[in-house]
Image (tube, rainbow, N blue to C red; front, side, top):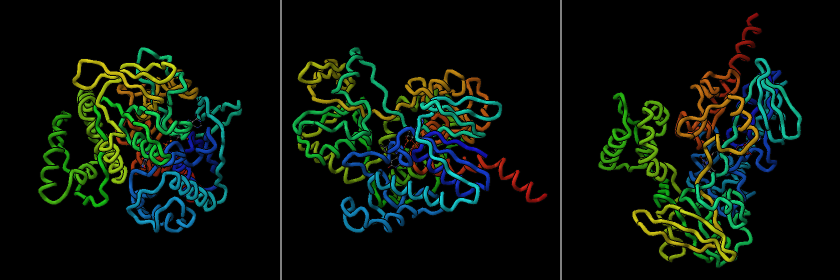
Length: 472
Ligand SMILES: Cc1cc2nc3c(=O)[nH]c(=O)nc-3n(C[C@H](O)[C@H](O)[C@H](O)COP(=O)(O)OP(=O)(O)OC[C@H]3O[C@@H](n4cnc5c(N)ncnc54)[C@H](O)[C@@H]3O)c2cc1C
């Protein structure tokens, strides 16, 4: 059996780990990563920002659901290597740096590689996959180097793409050196005069990392944050009591408003019984895919338009220390969070003149900043992704983005659907592209489950064959 995994981030690496752990002899796993430094780290865990804590505590970052303390135990064992980065002895409730988590991921892949059954091998390919074409029942993968491989099964694990540009009249601004399109690279903060005002577009967790990193490098200039709603992620509470699984309403058709009311009532009852809203939201997480799939199209649209910003800021929380930092900076007037629409951005030579319109106001205002960093979150619309592989797959009808452009359509096991909605046997995806089907599909908790199930699927035919051989 030959299996190629395109993308060496968390999704791809974890798939490779499970394959190495479970495949029998005669299996070759190709793990393909275009960026050498991102191999086994991906975008999230290769960050070189000065401030980049995981957004969940160490005790909740195990790669393996059946070994929930695996990451915590690993970091306890290896903490001596990170003396400069860790404050004293690690505790289960610490928010460890993402780059350390990347080391853990890499280490667990090495463990799986050395423990793999005889005849099971991992081949790392450092190249960009530029095309995947059907070749009978197999797939031919072509690389930027013009090399090619043919495999029986392929997994697309392309992860998080850089944010898309906002629609402004002065599109030429996006070619300007004062504009940073990808917020995850440390170079966005380099050569920045300490007193320079900066604009961060979007108020997501990435914005929080950038504010923290600016502080860590001694930045003194004003930081503006502009987002349509101006809502900040809520703080994490490590003492959140676990809440029982919810009895989600089964009435059909389900509406976004019904759901909203249900959750609000449930929170009311939970709080009266000593729980918090966090307990309820955490308890809902497992049911999100089923809820999303039960919502009619119009209700999904309502959710995305009216409820999404509140869901996202409560579901994706920041460490309490980051929350305190943001509060302090706002009180000192060093950070200003504006609920506003971004109208335009122009380089005047000395500065970037940013035109905004605050929510509920008729008049436009101007901000003068030195640099603009796009923190609006990963581009999920595959029709807008400027990567040769995605363009080719779309052009050949091998991908189908969903109507809301959250990701890609798949069958229940992650098999990609072609443009006609037919499953492409042997071609799978996991992680962020599955947001279209599952809504929650970007965090470790969801990805580790998907990777485990996907490997079962990938090896199914193979194990059946092996069993048949053993019986014979
Ligand atoms: C900044 C950031 C912080 C996060 N922090 C957390 C956290 O603390 N906890 C949590 O649970 N989740 C976190 N997440 C969520 C995150 O989505 C997942 O944890 C996870 O990292 C996603 O992994 P992935 O492998 O799917 O994607 P990615 O990490 O994006 O990896 C995909 C990889 O595929 C490669 N690739 C893409 N196309 C090709 C191609 N054609 N050829 C070769 N290689 C290709 C890319 O170079 C990339 O390295 C964070 C996300 C981000 C962006």
